[in-house]
View 1: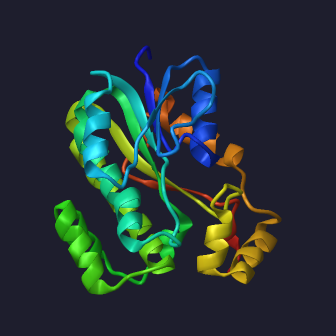
View 2 (view 1 turned 30 degrees about the horizontal axis):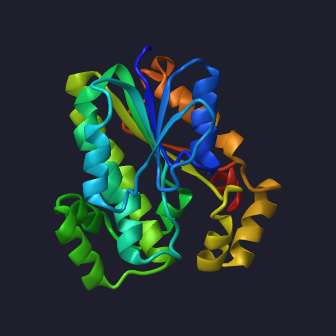
Length: 251
């Protein structure tokens, strides 16, 4: 594809690795990140995804056509709940709605969710409620429910998995897929934040089950494959990438 890929969260961790791998394969990459940083060769643009106006401005400055979108940016539960909701769910929703018609046929949106989605105690009705609300009303719902810390993160990732399926349905008419990838604990700059909100003992126990935590280069090849036309029949699904953590620990 001659069109560029868009990668959010390209300054570090999984997002940076995805951008690096796409560049190495000869693709053009546009990166969005609050830090305004990314790998050499990427066209990186500073954007605070918690700011809807900034997201709209970034979208307006993008090319008319994209090869696909890797929606990797996310923040842990150590951040204020409103920011967690905005970055982890509302920004991907906003970007997807604006960019889906601009993605080339056989392209895809790949959202990075988390195995933490399965820990959320909020039901599917809550997910549908929030996905059906405008941004301001979604934030008001979050405030009323008094979610904070890890429960906020878990819920936003559960809702993101559902959002990917909604966008997949919307993308059928355009020949564009949408799906999510759920990593387990991964060595990124925010791993310490997850230890703070989820408990260091729990995180250590997870590493013991599969021998180690994941690395960005464990996850990025899956994302780049799912972005490609080779994954043309993979759609509206969450793909777990946790080294077997959830599938084996209760055997």
